[in-house]
Length: 380
Length: 143
Image 1 (cartoon, rainbow over the protein chains, first blue to last red):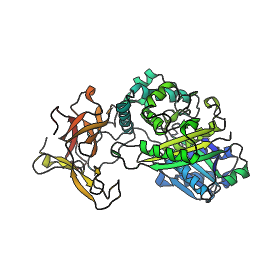
Image 2 (image 1 turned 30 degrees about the vertical axis):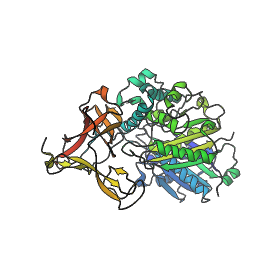
Image 3 (image 1 turned 30 degrees about the horizontal axis):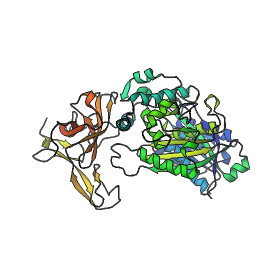
């Protein structure tokens, strides 16, 4: 029962504003793309897992199935903040490992609204501004300030994340924003929450991505040629830590999930060829360099300065352009990170290709919190 | 400002006595001694013990743990403002706005003291609230 689960197909829409299209239309298109990539049709799918946040109470998975073939198979709608998509992948992985199904379709999809994320309905009065900030750019800026205080990380170093990821996205036709942004442009952009400027924040866009997961048996039956192995799937929530969640701690849960994932896969961070991590805001990416063990404690600033995490470097991070370039349609993001890894591991990533990519790690964080990490190995 | 006793507390931490200064009160787990600032709480989040939480008066001073300066907020919210996370002396973590402080002085480690003010806006029913913010602490001997 504990055999390898394979990704046999992957599909993704270009992230963009799709005002005229319904959620299920986006999800259906991504689903077809993944099914076609796996060279199967909807009748081979034994269960559908749908990652989505904002319409989670309105059966998004079933609405997608109604667009592409109402086969009556189980549909699970999965929500876990910004980790919804990756959680949906994990749930399919769990079910296949348990022997329930041989082939599952996972669709991550979201239509975002406009405006800043953060805050909710108050019990008494709105306190935004008068009693601190609950806005997402501010929360991640606060986390960055800790890193600066401890290690002297500069605003320039945080800004460099946006320079890098926007440059990577020039090679990704599925990203919403594909223009290079030199350092002066990033630092000179409108300040949202210091040090995060507008170009250091992921955008609200709509999007969908999908994967076909299959058991060892199914992969052998269909021919394993382009299938990518899931070597690890790990998930954590945020354990108690002193200041969490007044100061959201997304570091501990990431470290815990990373340790579990590396152990499951029998590899270490030095074995990775590429990483897709959760750069919802530029400040977050540097913290995750250390959380994922890509460098030593406090070394994140030096790592981005060294070029190691850029295309062509020792450990390229967010070759897709990251959330900063693709945008962050919440339910789709986690699936899209895995889609990106699959392209590289098959040698099909075009001008973004990490040469000789064999092992990749995908990481997402959902505030509240959830960390979900997958490690994939290519057909080689 | 109106007499604090005539205002409602913005959250469950804020205590407004009939006379005397307002103060913050969280809870402490008598089993593992962890201090919480998210009352009301069902059980201890650290050790899981039940029926061990007792009220704990929080210190009126602490230090900045993390901060940002928000320059773009929801429509209608005046900017900029400094959102800060404060580690209160003796335990408890709160988030609020740092006021009466010049930009250059805002930094992790800055010593601060609580200040209690009337909220600039009421709730939908017109009720007025007392809120708590922080100001830089005077340089003085710590006890």
